[in-house]
Amino acid sequence: MNLIDGKAIAQSIRNEIKEQVALMKRQPRLDVIIVGEDHASKTYVANKERACKEVGITSVIHRLDEYKTEKQVIRYISDLNKNKEVDGILVQLPLPKHFSERKVLSQIKETKDVDGFHARNAGSLFLGEETLSPCTPTGCIELIKRTGISLAGKHAVVVGRSNIVGKPLALMLLQENCTVTIAHSKTTNLKEVCKTADILCVAVGRKHFVTADMVKPGAIVIDVGINRGEDGKLYGDVDFENVLPIASHITPVPGGVGPMTIAMLLKNVLRTRGKG
Image 1 (cartoon, rainbow, N blue to C red):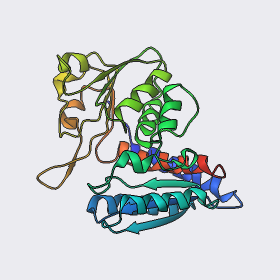
Image 2 (cartoon, one colour):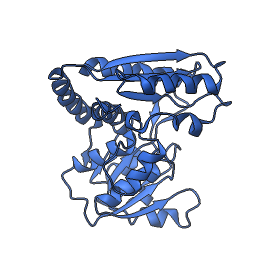
Image 3 (cartoon, rainbow, N blue to C red):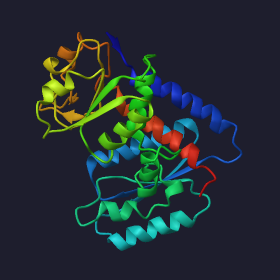
Image 4 (cartoon, helix red, strand yellow):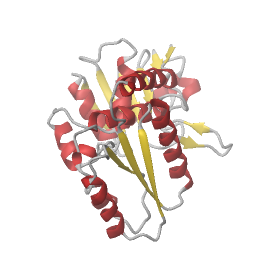
């Protein structure tokens, strides 16, 4: 068994980005909009701000109160779209309940969409074209590649079908010439399906959803889940301790996919530079 150290891999990527930014005449700039007082969102934004500072990317945080209307937030986005100094725009999710997340996110100019959620970027990913892709699944692919094992011809099972992780990850695995199965809570014989996977990626948001009897010996296991246990600790969607002896490679939680998501965000900011 080999532990896939997402924290160390993400740090090496950030070091590379820092070197690239140091050679630029103008620092790339990321603008983040956060609406409301969601504690987890504030923590995520602080982490992104810290990561930007580390590599030399300018980050501007727009903290809006939860009483702002959808129209007001869209106006904010419109102004940032027009601002030539702004390279990337990110709207921190979740938004307050009275907002349509799809409507708000669709207002971000696709060339500044560092989250890769815009319909045009999603369409380009579907067509296999070069595009800004969602950070978490991009990080998952990078972690799998870092094992040194060829993806071509492998059977990959993605458990979870969200627009943010499951669907784009399945498309990316297809582009790497995997045979891909998308499974979810309604999949019949889920245990048997998972056990056929050479590469098992789990993103369902349920603590220890995947148990040892669902994992093929020697499989690569990528755990996207972040769940807070009753003891206050973070747990993945995979029963890590019991799957550990079975998998050939596995990501821990925390310290696996999470750090890679931010590293891929920083890479996307570099890619947006000067395109807005």
